[in-house]
Structures are given as structure tokens and as C-alpha cells.
Image (tube, rainbow, N blue to C red; front, top):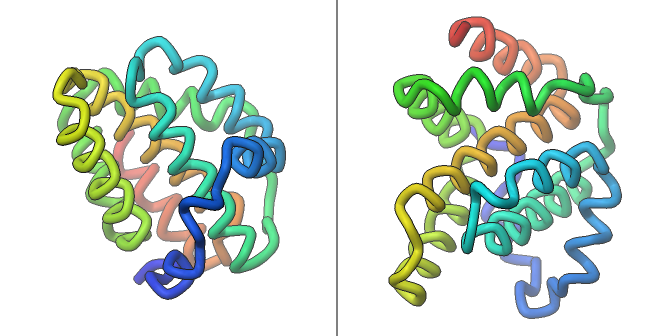
Length: 162
């Protein structure tokens, strides 16, 4: 499935995706920036990597099309509460993200794996929180950019995890 293709991601020059460009992407969706700030301490040392990958994700979706709808103000926090407290639900979220956006999820996992090899002091908890933050934000971005079929699939998933 997936809205974002491997080919699109390959057009991005990751070395040229500077902090300024990441900020530019986050400014496009300030609600994402606010959510990231609220989870900053919990993410610990993986925070910059998660922020980077969310910037890449916003960039990719903007390259593919225009937003179709606004995100409800409490969207991220509601999903966070639903998934952060119950491990089985968090696994459902990861599986859904993998199904809906396999290329972005794969890139995220490869990036986090590379960082954990480079920095062996990353805590498993930080990686887990970072992955959950990324998944929650990706679901929100899917909500904003999805066509009606994608939105229907998201609503079905969200409804099945209550």
C-alpha cells in the first residue's frame, strides 16, 4: 500500500536535509511541533532522530500532495494516551503504520537501528517512546493528507483500538 514510495524517498538528499529544513517542515504543521515538545524528555537521546524523521515524513507528504483536512487539536494526545499505556495496543499501532506506510516505517526502523549501533548508550525505553511518537505523528499526518479511502481505513483502525 503506502502513499509515500521508496522512489520519492530516494529523491531526498539526506545530507542536505539540514536543521533549518526540518524546522521549515515542522512549521508547516505546528501541532506536530507542540506534540514533539511535550514528549521531548521521554524520548531522551533519540529525540533528534525522531524529529529528523518526522521532518522527512512531512516533506514527503507535502511532495505528494496538499493537506485534505485539519487535525483535531487533541488528536495526538488522545492517540498517545490510548497507546502509551498498553503495550498490545502500541504493537497494533506499529503494525498499522507498517501496513499503511511501509517505506516510511522501514526507513524509520533502519535509521533507529543505525543510531542504536552508533550510540550503544541508547536506552530501550527511549527507542520505544521514540517509535511510538513517530507512529502517532505518522497516523496524524496520514489523517491530514489521506484521501477518503485512506481516511476510512484510519478511522476503522482507530475505532478498533478503543
